[in-house]
Amino acid sequence: MTATSFSLTKRDKPLRILSTSDWHLGNPRVPAGNICDRLRHYMFPLLEQTDLLNIGGDVWDTLMTLNDETNVIVSFLIDLLRMCHVNNVTVRVLLGTFSHDRDQSSVFEIYQKKCHFTNDLRYISKVYLEEIESLNVRILYLPDDLPYESSEACLEAVSDMMKTRGWTWVDYVFGHGYFQHMLPKNIPREPKCTFRVSQFTPWVRRYILMGHIHLSDQTQNVIYNNSFDRLAHGEEASKGCLYIEDSGDMAKLKIIDNPDATKFVTLDLTKETDPEKVGDLYLSLVKQKFQGIPGYVRVVHPSAEIRQSLHRLTNSRHPELFYSFRQTPHDVVNEARLTVRKSFDVVEYPTPTEHTLPKMVFDYLEANGGSKINPDRITPILNDL
Picture: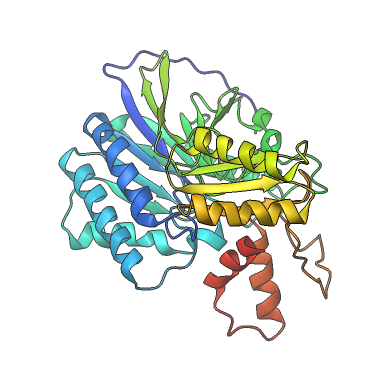
């Protein structure tokens, strides 16, 4: 896609965008009710001063069945849609990663229709270009798991779509997936459709708002929304969403913090070898980090005896905490190991990550007579391992 020239002109009134993603409702570690309550508390008030709500994928953590937690989620989604209806907020919901969302976010349109809400809402599950005339904004939507062999092929298709419309630029990109600068370190092979900032800067006038990575990050005009809540160890950073006031010639970006996000804390105690001292140190750190709030604590220590003693100490003194461990800082799978019976063809499968592995396992089981395996059990099983 070739570079183009464009000017940014001041808007008569700012375009106010609330951008959020990666709620992962149904996650086995964090009750959906907790996440929904925090979304109500910190996000709902902003809808009174929002023109466009971008829900950028991974609304769901896994395939949901009808149960008490599902009822909590449905109630929350209807409340959210009602708030958007009352405040005339335009809503765009993007398909996220297959192993998380499946096609479950199509319920947004179903609930919208059933409740007779009249604000503008769309669920988008494929590459799509749109001009929202009421907001005077052009948007490209890039869901996850795109059917292209490379980012170049994807953007060539986008270029053709833009030529058909006579466009040479868009204001925003709403996407879900990887940019090269956000890939995990030492990854052996990039996922097929990994984007680069330079591919967008010549023709995107404002921002590229991305979901998928559970971090808040801005690199040039590419912004990752962050996950709204903590869902695993390694996510100790603050959580929340993004609010933008776009005046046309300039924009104000504000991170909306979720200070009540579930606590996941890793305590590296490898330097303390005295069993008595390590217990006192552990209790002191737990008190400091959690302050009596429920959460997840993970201990790093090479001694199985000390790890087990701290587990017992947790059960007796802090039953509100979930305890796990690592032998060393680099041992990411406790003492359990998976035996891989068949190698995956790296040409046909994406690089294994926490996001792609559930789908790879599901595809493997389905191809090898395991079609009766319930796919929504795969992610919790891998989490337990």
